[in-house]
Image (cartoon, rainbow, N blue to C red; front, side, top):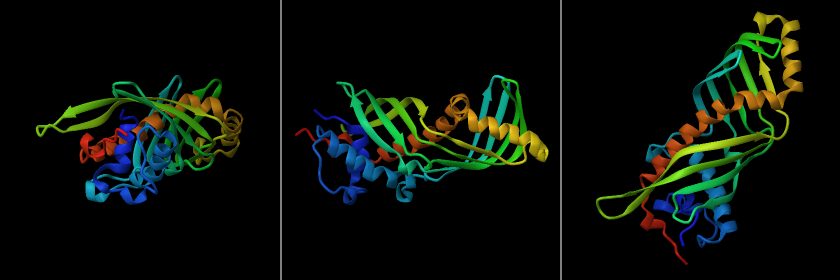
Length: 241
């Protein structure tokens, strides 16, 4: 049975990345498949100009709106780096290849976001206000991502697949560093209260604001993966033994 197929496309299809695979894999050989995918994905995230696929690492010029109770935070001209250091594991597919699940492990200190921010509101009783440059340095993150698999039969009888309707759960496991410049129009005493709160409550802040940041990246990453899959058919990569 053909398992782990959508992500295997990224390694085997059209020969673009065939040279990156040290050994061929049976599609039922999970350790081999995961190793091959983790070898190939960083190159996909860098972008493939000849296929019209843009870079996902660095992921640049993103604008993210975060609206949570009592706080509005806009992240502007954001660049995120470090996705190439994340590793996939525990790939799972249902029996008819219409749904997949995968764990994503991102090591501490590798994911970084920089840009400008505009923030106003409060968390609890603490006021937060300012605009200027910002930098976030992520700790260790573990994510679970699920999505649907769409199969499309072409006019020539061959089949293509695409990844649709993703959802994810992100768990921050170690400390995240939040850096905001020009809080309260340069009032260092008030700014230190915010930074102290962020140091002591990094996890609760992450759980409050993280999803729109991840979602902005996954939206473009999935777009780029599906752009790649336009160039591949199921018949090119189907290995049943």
